[in-house]
Amino acid sequence: MSANTSSGPLAGVRIVDLTTVLMGPYATQILGDMGADVIKVESPGGDAFRYAGPARHKGMGALFLHVNRNKRSVVLDLKTAPGRAALLRLCATADVVAYNVRPQAMERLGLGYADVRAVNPNIIYAGMFGFGRDGAYAKDPAYDDLIQGLSGFPAMLGRSTGNAPAYVPANICDRTVGLYAVGVISAALYHRERSGQGQEIDIPMFETMAQFMAGDNLYGETFVPAIGGTGYARLMAPERRPFATSDGYLCVLPYTDRQWQAFFALAGLGGELAADPRFATMAGRTAHIGELYGIVARALAGGTTADWLARLKAADIPVARMHTIESLLEDEHLAANDFFKQVEHPSEGTIRMMDIPSRWSGTAPDVRRLAPQLGEHSAEVLAEAGYSADEIGRLFDQRISAPPAVARAA
Image (cartoon, rainbow, N blue to C red; front, side, top):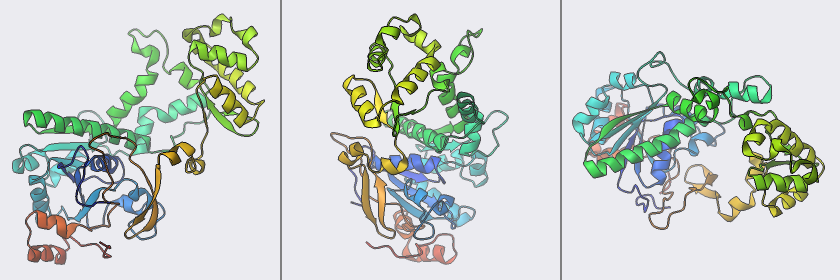
């Protein structure tokens, strides 16, 4: 891994990253993977996500390691005047400032858009936070579970399964909005490249996820007046689940007319169902999707996973094994693409890292650094901002900044 250079498409872009936990760090890690120099600014206590999940050393938890590679960590106490001054010096040479606290908190710190723009008129000032600035929730805190609930995930899961509402067992809102933020920030960089104009951008979680969920499930309420209820029928069918075979589970999705006819033939039901008007068109199948999925479930229960997998693939019917996280680690396709890599982290030893998924013929993204210790690059980054060794020492002594607790191997 080269710690200093990148061939990625965002090489030369500098991002001052004030984000914590997951949504913002996930976005800035992807931007770092794309070549940007991401300077992660942390409080003296560090990003709270450092302490989530199993860890070999304090502050280097498993979850933190997966969203903070390709970053340099500098400690600054932004509640102090010297800390704020140092941050603004970093912003003066940056292309992007990314944050994920409420805008009011940035204003109170004296680090609002106007403050940062005063030292860098062309800055892209990107905020990822819970709710748009107008409306009843504007000042409310936001976490993934809360945004899932407001966006309708638990209600729709409960409705589709007939069980109590439940959260998706992933930080789906944090990661979805983080992915959206990557596109938004990249588009803003492109606009500035053409126009020379920076700007302030708000990326609210709730509005982003409301669009995400309603896009599938507004359904009949798309029309005014409504011509049906909410909930895409195929997604809401209680029978839509991995199908049990005699020895495991398969995920099967006949979709087109031809695929359904092929499935009926494989199941020995071609004569009976091939001409059934309920199943002849997509509109008919959607209206009777529960019955169809019941047919699939009964058919698959009579054979093994391997047998059905082979037969369905041979008939060109979409099918996949159902993985657990444990079996995902052994997936043959991912192995062929070297997706899960075992790498040596300078302080954490051997860790498992997931590869960058995209492939580029020219400006390939790369992994140059693994997740940093708290304050690992404080002296380096401050020196780049023009601080002398004596000035950096004083910031350390006053606990406005800090070096890493443990020296990291070169």
